[in-house]
Length: 289
Ligand SMILES: [Fe+2]
Ligand SMILES: [Fe+2]
Image 1 (cartoon, rainbow, N blue to C red):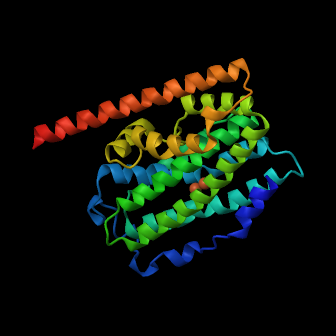
Image 2: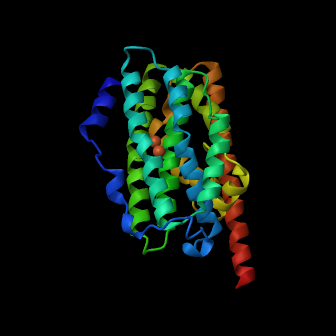
Image 3: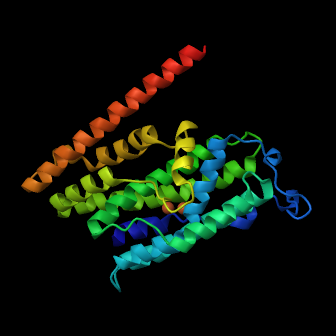
């Protein structure tokens, strides 16, 4: 843990939220109320910005969940503080960009923030093994979601593309920390880690379930090709599970062997669903043509 934490600190990503924003382009909302025509954008991309920003807003609850698994005077506690410091700038810079460019409705956003934060709903993995498996997938998933959202912004919104690239870059570093921490844990206790992985993968939900109309937004985001089952399989599960090399783990308990079988059956099932969805989409496109 200490080695990975030091590795993280050795390559600091220093960037200033205030320097990323073209402040001169802003307008008062009192004189110029928000309208969708201020920044034409598809519903799916708007939903993605909304959900991703609200997820970043929910940081206090993620921090408290992480600290619940972090003993005093242990390097994981220092990591949690560093992580919180880095995560905190994501909602700052994203909200400044959102307000200046008017890419989503600021009233809807604030209403969503109030509802979500008043519930304090975040996933709460039971054990430390569960936690490091879950956050490995979660950091990777947020990295992909921010990256793909940025790629869907209009080419002329350089500010937005830059903001989301910076945020996605931080998520990448968080992902690498947890992914490699979990990998090291597999060497110490493969059975516990395998059981935790199977549990976290089969139960995995994107953060944000406390957001109003979350499912409706999730469907739009998936339809837009930003983040859905396909990305979860191809960009999240596959690279992480390959690196952990679960097929070659030896000396497993019976329970862990069973967890491995369940996990591979589950991944195969997702693969079939993704395949079926792709076929349907292709048929629909052909019919339209
Ligand atoms: Fe973040
Ligand atoms: Fe992160």
